[in-house]
Image (cartoon, rainbow, N blue to C red; front, side, top):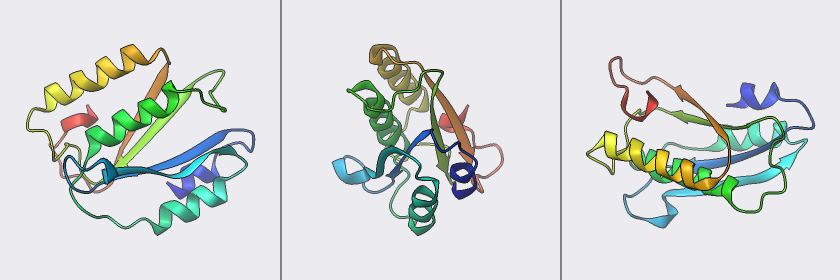
Length: 134
């Protein structure tokens, strides 16, 4: 994540959201660094300080990231809005039906009115485990 942040242009807006915790807990995802330009070093430092904890709450994190772009947003991209999801897991621990989770994401995207591009980065994800990252 630190390398990706460092490779962005100074006028690109970045933010950082963490996910992971207890299923059903609204605190299982939170914005760590608010959107802003010129902050690759801040994003990199914050990403390096995150500690894996709790269950992989991919679905709530992804839905919250979509919501971040759906509200009035000071740095909405002119060309694209990209959300990069980095996870050691490729399935949501809180949903037994990954197809339903994918459908929930598609529905939220369709209702958002925003064009978003998702990039999934599996960090040490076991082979053959595709879950939400397909």
